[in-house]
Amino acid sequence: MLKKNNKNIVSEFRRDLVSGDWILISSLRNTRPHFLGKKEKVKKKALIKNCPFEDPQKSGNADPVLQYFKPSSKDWFVQVIPNKYPLLLKNKLRASFDLEGVHQRIDAIGFHEIVITRDHKKNLEKMSPAEITMVLRAYQERYKNMEKSEYIDYILIFHNKGELAGATIEHPHSQIVALPITPPDISSSISGAGDFFKKYKKCIHCTILDREIKEKKRVVFKNKHFITINPYASRVPYETRIFPLKHSSDFEETSDEELTYLAKSLKDALMRISKALKNPDYNFFIHTASAKVKDVPYYHWHIEILPRTYKWAGLELGTGIEVVTIPPEKAAEHLRSVL
Image (tube, rainbow, N blue to C red; front, top):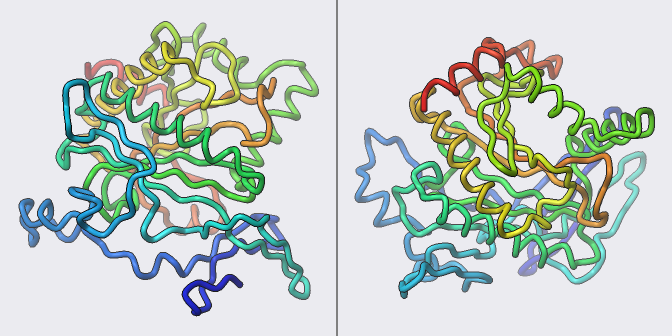
């Protein structure tokens, strides 16, 4: 157990002996405030006035570790700050691994940062491709900085929009979390891709994309460098994924030209989802290879967008099997038609 300010604070990963999954226990998050509120009771002006991201440093946040400015502007457009209420604790030492009887734990050492954009009312789908490119470049720059740390195994970049997606602050922002472990979902995905590669000497994602391009049923959008699809085994209605057309395992190695096309693809996908589903809450995250390994021949980085139009019930919670009420072929057809 780690100590901070002479108080015992639980911030550790604990392993489920049966599934092998790592679970994060973090009491650091208990003190964070909620700035969404019930919209019918809280006026928009009050939300903006009291928003901790409207003027981050005035609200007591740390100085930015990265800022980008628009051309000919003195005001920041993208600002990256350490999370005031982090899931993880920063430490220069390698996270310790312990056995507690039959149990296993690792100190939750890592980084947790917030990527904030300036306009309180301007979500990503309302931004220009040039503005989204700046956000993506901030993701990329901070990723490259974090991966230098010897105790970091995996870095997740994600964005929550709306209360159903877990956002506690309305102001548009993304998060970057650098972990000392590879999360279960990523680990199983990488392992499955590796098994396919051993058997067929091909990247499974490239194989799937070749098939999707030929069939066209689940393709939503395609440009010079990226393709947007609704995956064959979607986990939620209108799940949408964006893949680079050319094989690449590492998001952080995306070129400047490719970033501009990625920005166009991301804006297009979010606009289509917003119009088709009447501005839903959503999560998106970037799945990339381990921070410790480059140029993996069997893993293909991508963005996954999950609209939050559903709630888990007994079957989902009891079995881990998601129930999707709209086939991805129908979802793709709908998304293609709205723009």
